[in-house]
Image (cartoon, rainbow, N blue to C red; front, side, top):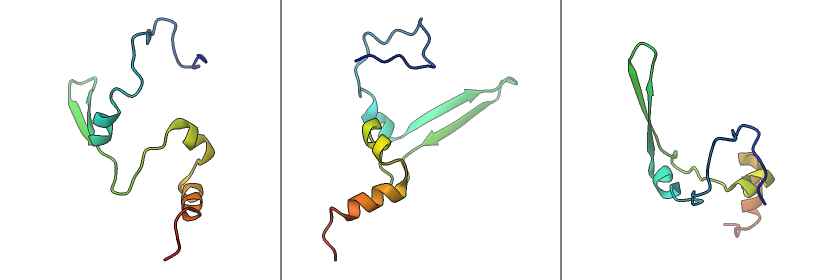
Length: 80
């Protein structure tokens, strides 16, 4: 089911896109370069912090914050 995103413009064409094709590289880290009005370049490298996880959108909708995720996962692990 294709639900239009409110911020997507009609001229954007994702018909040849493959879902998840860049997720491994993204999780390994990525670099963002911003060229400012004065010509200066700001480069920032992003990685997932130690212990961080990426939630799929449907899971994120059910668990919107760390507390709710931790509470659910504690119910799945055996007490030590």
